[in-house]
Amino acid sequence: MKITGPDQQLLSVLRENARASTAEIARRLNLSRTTVQSRIERLERDGVIAGYTVRVAEAAERGHIRAHIMITVLPKQMPAVVEALRVLPEVRTLHSVSGPSDLVALGVAPTVEEMDALTDRIGAIDGVERTTSSIILSAKFER
Image 1 (tube, rainbow, N blue to C red):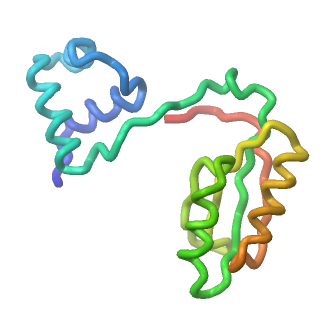
Image 2: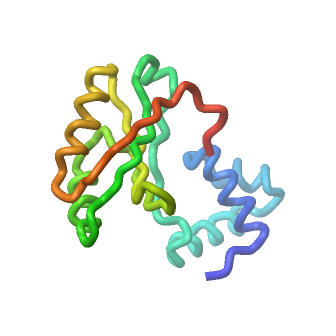
């Protein structure tokens, strides 16, 4: 699956607003509406665009605590730990990383107490050896 320069531009516009109309995208990229539509369909068919999602405005969750939770997993327990984390709605993203931790989760909770409870629940998952958390103070930008 080859992503061209115009595909990258299209993906950039969709990252900003996946609900933008084909006509609006075409105007921004100086392409025809038909070309934009066919590129989107090809990117979806080729699996480049895996889906669309909702980004909640920071103001909508104002006051919520967000934290990066670093998780160390016991050997051979990764699949079970990942599945246990997948069902926790407070865990928004999960990344496998190199370094002293095996996973980094983005946790979101309304209060410090609930974030504490979330990290305790994560630490209690079979196969989790240790967790450490870093509270996010602010987002400088997100794409």
